[in-house]
Image 1 (cartoon, rainbow, N blue to C red):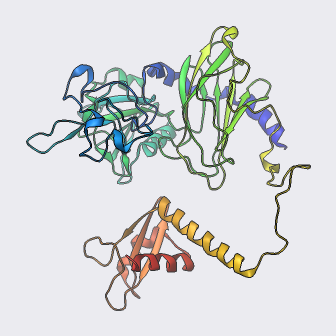
Image 2 (cartoon, rainbow, N blue to C red):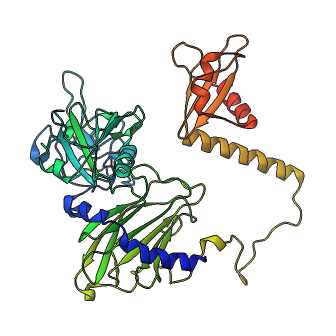
Image 3 (tube, rainbow, N blue to C red):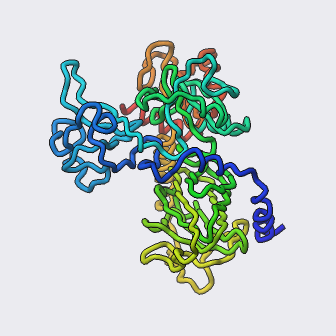
Length: 462
């Protein structure tokens, strides 16, 4: 069956999917949110106290904090949103926005900010969990590798609408009825870092951070008047070889889209916007052609979003806010100046080729490539692969039974064996017959001999 026939079949079947987006739209209005990243790194609001509505401690101005690590001087281009103001920000990628405060007698000189409007759409807030009865009445589980997406996938697989994380390692599932009788708690009560991700919060002691399971899903049928569609596995990075589709069918004659976040790894990771009725391509964006900064209006009542990542795809992804327009005259059919507009064209991923099109200019290639150049190229590729591996995987070097240390063992007869498993790695001292290494390494794969040799050289140089 050809790719065009498969697309036609998908268009017929998508309307039959359960309306997962409908509940999401009823539970949370994206128009009230100032943040679309789970840690509020994109917050650019004006709260200047550690608590809402002037509560808490006043923040210091960022142009008066040169004695600390972050100030307006350390952000000359404004990438972190620092400047001659004292608004809460998150310049270091912490779990939520914060600010410097006047140092206390206990030596505390910064605080997290409790910002009610800085909760990504799909996050419903912090709730009390007394345990009798539980705040979410569905199935539950615990994991020392818990992250927000792990809990979302678990509850989505169980068929529930809500997922709650608690105490850094516990996951609970529930429904809208549970939320209706829930008791809200201050946002700062849900301050425990997830055991599986240092950049995510997983509730607190007796406190549940509750999410809609539509966050980070790979498919869905969205019928709410407005909502937000996230890339797969959000707030984690999307993975390789993802092929996801979402159908947007809010009431109205047209759609308005706004990308709150867009970060794709390369041009081979692609997001397509198609008319759900005709299948015609309206827009296409990728790692090299991002969407326009402002609203994008499309004259269609039903939109099919399709996202594909290649075998190496890893990036933050996207957060796409949408709303239905009742009057088609509000539509701006022409692409805004400077926007990435792709004309309708057939796409057949199975037949996609990296070969240049006929008539396209051919790159100049030397007739001969010397063996020296080839050797240098191989060494560079090996070095880049090793650096990418070290960047993507965190290595825990554990010599013997002593405390964790970084470096090779100096003892006689002991050598390093490096193993990895996404997204973490472990380097174990493996003398012949050492039973300690066999247990942890059982679920891991060994690095290639060349990568092991290169990594040992790097470790020896420390």
